[in-house]
Image 1 (cartoon, rainbow, N blue to C red):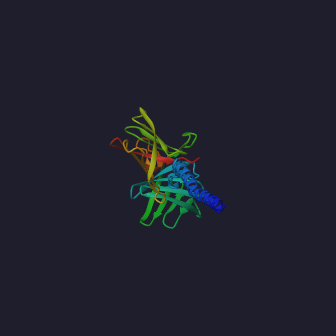
Image 2 (image 1 turned 45 degrees about the vertical axis):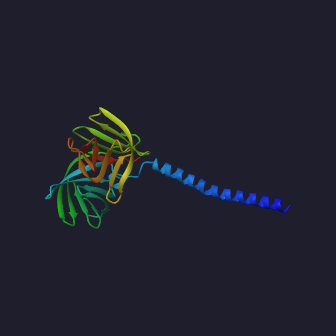
Image 3 (image 1 turned 90 degrees about the vertical axis):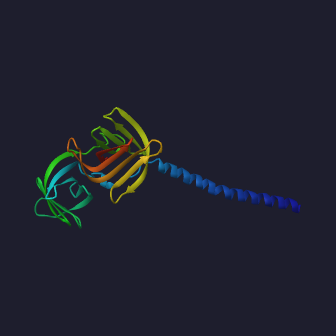
Length: 242
């Protein structure tokens, strides 16, 4: 009888140990599933690549440094891009015109002219070209679009999966490719995407900075460099909000 009780106890202990051992595996499987789902989601891009609540981008030609700036204004906030970075300026009270100011940068717009104040001095600017935002209506399921010229190319990043649609040679070649993020610097507004397959290399470098289409002159908030097949192509891009 004692042997029977001993056998039952041993069986119950083994079952308990087996159950305990199975629990971490189940949790690990859940964690792996969550990780796989996360890896299959498109990344959140830096806000400096987007226009916020603005309806259009405007360009400014500034002196004495011969700088070109890009702005996007939504009433209470001005987004400002130069060749060196991006800023988000809240509106300040002034007697005339529209002024936007943070601790280091000021932008005072009066009609077709603006004065920009920086720690290095002042810029006197004149308004140039403007364009409406690219929207999801123009580019369904796209969260970032970029294009360049000579030869004509474009990139569209899917808004839900880490994949991009690449069009090259003026539309003669098209392909959809998965990518991974090798650099994500939200503060600087910089992103670098690379191919998943090491045998078929490409790289896309996106930087928040004033950019102008070299044929139309249209303003954009991002400089984009595409490295593909030993070539390096340059263009401009814009984040597309839902």
